[in-house]
Image: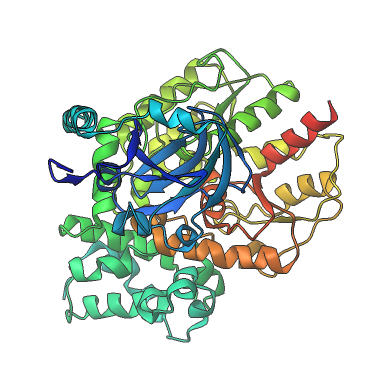
Length: 140
Length: 367
């Protein structure tokens, strides 16, 4: 779906800090959503922690940086880091070019995949949330 | 013919002294990362000569060249004619801003510092779990990068000061704004006055800075002269720490990256090494060290304006750390730590720290 010009694919789950989540077999893939990559501008650095790092729901596990902004990436579920997109090490701009494809960031092995259902999904929920976000950032 | 620009009035003779020998090219970090001759000191001096000759104007077309310099002073250090390129560049940038040409990142930074207390426009400062603005013997001045980008390192530094039982206080500091002088603007007088007033209220006789650039600004800029008039001494944390014994050691292979602001700009090379040798008998120098140290690429506004090239410069520096087999890379500047850590590849297994953070970690392990 497109919301005020931002591409927010219907099939994805979203967490409130603007990272999308998608199931892939036993793993979950995470990336940055279109709104966040537009707001951040050119991404210049993505922290890529070592595989196996333990992740705790809601806790910061990595940093991401554009020229003007430092963002934190929070674990959307409990689990461990299975792998990272190593392409981002030398080409973090992939997030700007293709945030739902080549710009994916991390794959997580969740302790309980059911936790994904606590995230936002579906046109109604995502639209309501994103419109509020757009308004919030416009005020800032 | 009367000079049109300030840089010409101040530095015409110096610019004409450039013999185009190219010694600067061999050591310029921007050239090293981009391989573009217009971006090294010789290229910049040639362009400024063209401006002085009236062949070209100082306008937007020169932004990428003149604003892409880390002011690391490697060129000046190696120039047989003694051309002080960083000072010339900084003056030319001021002329460019007056003429209405500036890199948008730096015009933005100047605006940010009119409304916010730090270069990142962050409105919620880390409190570092410490009371601020107390009466104390020392003020510890963190700096913007230490406050908002390398807060874990700053927390460790403060923990170390506590372990060493130093009587210090933090203040509600604001950006020293020295960086504005590097990117075509002037120090923000309101910010300077706020810092001075807060420092004086603590009764401290010494300010210890975590950032070498803040230290340079406080020591050298007229807007901060009141500190010296009141007898306040300004030192960088590396100068403060060299007199301590830490009673901890590491057997890891440790190397040291000289920050340009501490090394070439202040001549502080031995103090950090004295401290590191106490804790790391297995210390090894990188091929380029002390006055020949390769810049990490973060200075002069380059990290803000040209982040990709800035990180590419840091990668070149880290190749040297890899070459000497370092397991630990120490430095004394939060900007260097930040840029080097951003540049580190996953396959590079060494760790990058401020010396204070590393010592604190060693002390923590022995407790």
